[in-house]
Figure 1 (tube, rainbow, N blue to C red):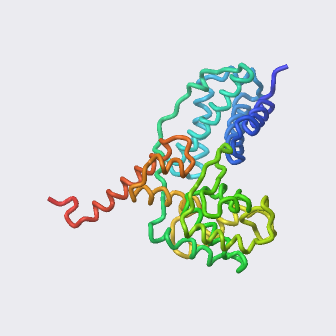
Figure 2: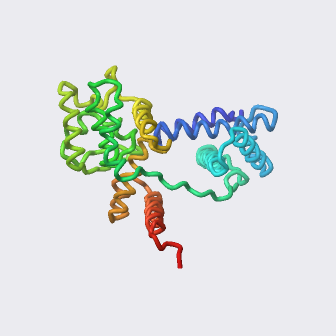
Figure 3: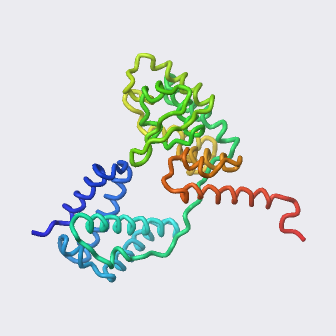
Length: 314
């Protein structure tokens, strides 16, 4: 009996989680993108689909999927480049699903795996300006809902900018992670459960230590950053506090916790830090990902040059 598309998708999710050690965010994103594509093919073909259908999708079916995604994007009035990136992400997820099907079920379809989309411009990271980033932690902490957690937010946002961590990496830290090396380097678990050592500059050490003192009775496996109910701090809470700050300051929507990581990398690059060193600090698997920050640095230099009184003049 042929496997249903839902069964195959579920098997892929299990494989990603147990064998590839993909992050929960990656698994959710892949599931959503591929499930959306499978739902379209069922509506397009007029029946529930299984491995036989998946093996025999045509180039015309793929073009129909792309046209559907384009219409959906236009209905949501998304920016053209953003819509293109969304389509690319969906097709990329579908191709990854088919690589799994080929590996585990010998289900192959060249029309899907070879389907290509026009290249889209990868958006440049949008860091905060140096003066804004330098004062961000203190200012964001002033928007903390409860006074007992001002030290927590001061430590958290200083860590994000001072060490370049992802918000998920910071919030997954436990008391023992800091106690093992209070002066750094801090052992951080990143994407794919890969670990890296991140040095801590003095101000990061000081603010983490100040927050740690408030958690004097906590066990080593207890979360370092907690919410008001004592559990691990929810990323949505951290983002909400930063949103209040950026709205009060009149900053764009790009001023998120991840922008602090972008700011760390960009400002290190502008100061002449080695690209390979920045790659290791950020935990990027590929140097090409880190090289995005060189383009940001070039854009910064161009803005500086264009501000010259004689720029563009004979």
